[in-house]
Length: 268
Image (cartoon, rainbow, N blue to C red; front, side):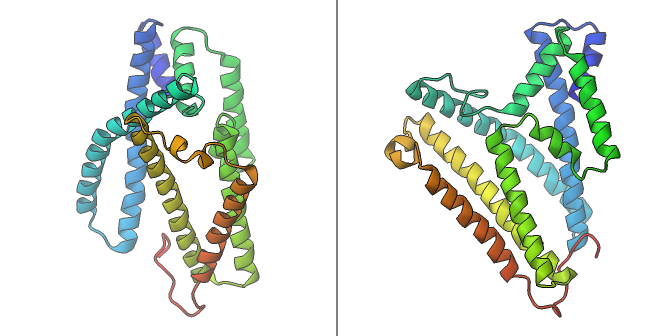
């Protein structure tokens, strides 16, 4: 969406200054958000179909959700940005989106692409290589070509967490196969695991917002609790292991009995 938007605006004669880059990002943001919302609504409607929901009521709920989240996200992003700026003033770095503590790699990539295309400085050979790599992944039937591509520009701290989650899921699948779970039991295990992982993701995001809100107010939690400022590697490793164990043990304990009815799924 970003590449096509930038190319169209360049053809229409937009200049390569900051205003041109802002125009490209603005139009691309609308297209990307529309596509993301469409995908999210498809998932919601599928879930509603499985559970017997009413489509038009779900659509109204989605409209309310999109409007509400659009209004709220502005304040959330502002809090995160201002909170990191305040922290940067204390620790001696330039805070805000794109900083060492709030890198926003995807946003940085989009800005680089926009400025490169509009300004006529885009490294097109790299783009073409990426296109052919994507085609190659598809021909090789790689399960998740998008994940491979995203992993190339995300920081290692993020991709390693995804890798750890994949290992955890693999261990669950192996244990489930070893215990000879039927399809219904496997579905229950996966459902519980997804719920646990989703809760961890949401909880981490909310805690980050809470920390940012305190920072905006001039209260820095890492100073009040200095233990968390530079935690020991061993302690962090132990915490990761404990979380992985919970993510493995709890879903497997909720596999249920072989004769229990299967939970709702896309195939039923």
